[in-house]
Image (cartoon, rainbow, N blue to C red; front, side, top):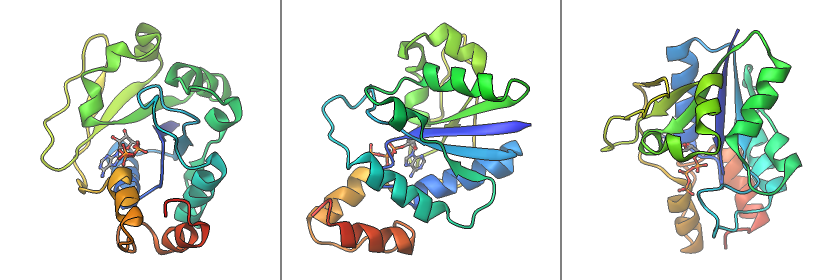
Length: 190
Ligand code: ATP
């Protein structure tokens, strides 16, 4: 069984994330793909993300009706800073026979050896870099095994969406429609 793990803040989830998911399922032949919202990213210590309950709800709305895509809440349940090594160990325990693929933005690949317990991390999963438009090809430092996906680069980011909402601009074509509606109703980024 091939499992994809996609960690991030998802503050909020957007169409770039969903296209990454589709490319990963198709190009890697994944059986299941888990979206794993972080409680607090170790790389964004200053950031105060929207409440976890809201980020989870948007993910559920974005993935509604999509078989094989799931939200894994373990990092939110653990709380504190979310370290990928702990999450990967949990997946190894739950799915000892599975082949694990961990998705990351191509720009993050070069710094993988700075992640907590990098040597162990490299043993537990293959890392898969996601292209962003205009971005350079991913470089994987040893001992990481990695590859790059082809499709579908889209220049959308959560920070751009938050900035647009703050400025009162629409985000309807950047996030799935039910997510746009939930964000409007929640007024979390106003
Ligand atoms: P922010 O703008 O707040 O930093 P983000 O849009 O990069 O957020 P995250 O939730 O932090 O979103 O991203 C989770 C993962 O998805 C990261 O590895 C990130 O590089 C990747 N990612 C996000 N947006 C895209 C996109 N448009 N194309 C490809 N990868 C993306």
